[in-house]
Picture 1 (cartoon, rainbow, N blue to C red):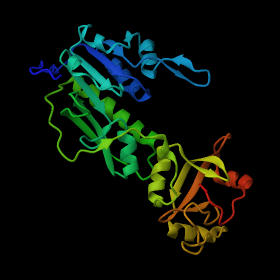
Picture 2: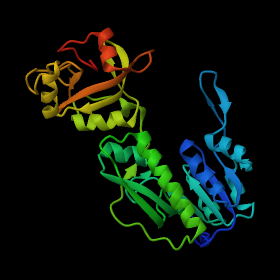
Picture 3: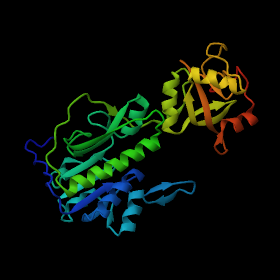
Picture 4: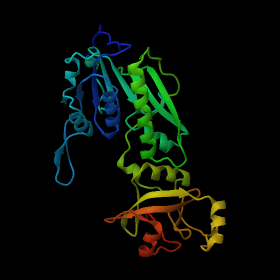
Length: 322
């Protein structure tokens, strides 16, 4: 039952004096380190409970827990403790849980979110921006309010998404930008948040099935999926990961044909989507062709396409994903 007269949410101070930090995965480690290096008083780190990982199913701490221990900061898994250590602001970076109103009434929180809100609210903003073919993205420092990434914006920085950006390169750049934004605002003036404005889109977590390559999709979309990392298909009944590929530039390919290897022009070979359509290795997509660069056969290490071809010996007309 909804409380007819709820308590107001706590208001963030312009210059916080004592912090609590909430975060869990690798991406949340650099901001914690940046706050500590800037001399900010971090009373407590709250992270998700240890999880069983790996073949031996060992119980392992989160990356943030490990980093906090190395910095000599107290760590807890109990979210309710954030309001018990005398802090006047909590900083949230990829904590992995929606903060309940009861906690927000006790302590103000800011969140470092890796998108230009309200575009890509949710768990996978960097992945969704890359898959959607966005040309720009960024980082927002926002107030934590009820709901999913709905709070006002204290500040943001923007970056272009390059044609060759991978998830790792883009996320790495955003983390560095986010650290600078976070430290700058908390050591000068946080100010007052500005309400979000614009079209809302949601960044649902990437499902494992989305990494399966659908060769009927356009080459440019397959390129984005590969740059996400972990894209997979099958070859002669076995799994094959595609770690690097690029849409075919037909004009560039024609020029390379004069270097010794003859690449057939688009349309010269009739191939179904996923079909081998030339040496090197060219694969037919739903619209255009993809040139594979680095792959990983099932149970083996990553290798460049030339080395894979020496063993697999694909010929024109063979198909991936069949």
